Amino acid sequence: MLRLVELAHQQPRSRHLWVDQTLRPIRRYVQRYFAPLLRGTRWRWDAQGLTLHFQGGAICDFGSATRPELLEGFGYHCLWINEAGHLLRDERLYFETLLPMVMESREGRVFIVGTPKGRGLFQQMYEWGRDPALAADWQSFRTTSEEGGLVDKAWLERVRQQMPARAFRQEIEAEFLDDAGAVFYDVERAATAAPEAAPDPQGRYVLGVDVARYRDYTAVWVGRNDTNSAVACERFQRLAWPLQQARLAALSLRYGGAPLYIDASGAGDPLCDALEAEGLPVVRVTFTTQSKRRLVDHLSIALERGTLRLVPHEQTLRELRAFRYELTATGHVRTGGYREHDDCVMALALCCWGMGARSGRDFILGAPMGARELD
Picture 1 (cartoon, helix red, strand yellow):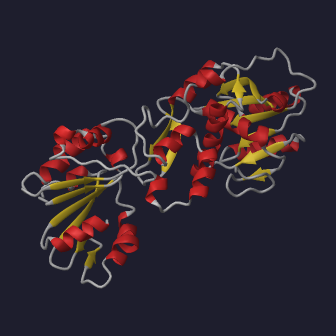
Picture 2 (cartoon, helix red, strand yellow; picture 1 turned 90 degrees about the vertical axis):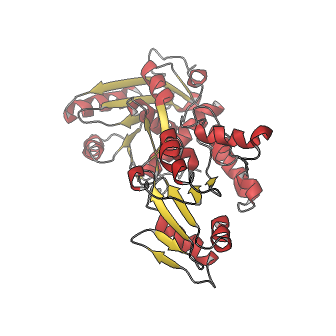
Picture 3 (cartoon, rainbow, N blue to C red; picture 1 turned 45 degrees about the vertical axis):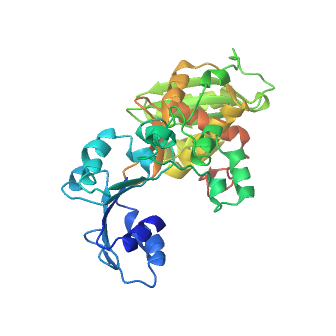
């Protein structure tokens, strides 16, 4: 942003285009970042047209990659691509929409900024900038969060202990990784727990339950605290609430009255009420975008570091391989299975959380009520 402001003042009447993944953050960019940089100069923000007018006549239009057809038809001296790791997954957007708009200017320049999100066009461009043969046309720069100087080093070290290693390498150390959207890696290495023919009377068990009413599956993972193992998984579909209640109650009793960590969002809440009415130990977990991601990150770290093992349940392994981080149209990060269910993954995540959580009746991850918050 500082470089954009510098060029706008150095080159009066220059035209710039800033392209982001969505329009939602742009107004905040202008108020939080551009306004302080422009203090002491004459400038104007056209909120309706999404155009920033600079002293001297330079302008910057802001646009979104979600509607590329609305960007076309104009010429610019400088193109600024933000969140390029996401935006340049669509190569046609760059080569067929964005690049032609700066080709008419002899001084046309393209600035590409973002966190790596796997291999693709953004990674290729970075490599072009490191190639001496292309030095006249491309330059590449890479700065980690630590090198940027804006993040406390001690805090970064704590984050390193809490994040999956691959996520840390990508988001903090700015590395281009293969299959960067994936959450779980080398899942077969963690699938080494031995199945139990029957519950061990001396064992301490918990159940993680991802609830579904009709289309999806209700999945249950059984975890054993004293061995840090997920030892059994059950999955069923299209069962009425009384039948689901009876099956979950039977499973809890079979494993010595094991507490049930249940997704209580929406349809799961009345099922929790019914199970509690039977005197069963229920811990309700309210799923939000934030709490679901924290559960998934917690599971990913446990599998990565070998602190949780599971029996080789094929459906769960298939879901783990397909699980992805995705950027939504509103700019939020969500998790989910790519062309797969995620019921077994979420049941396993609840089970993993339950194996380390103190007992409690209700909690929302990040705002605990009666159970500990994730570190």
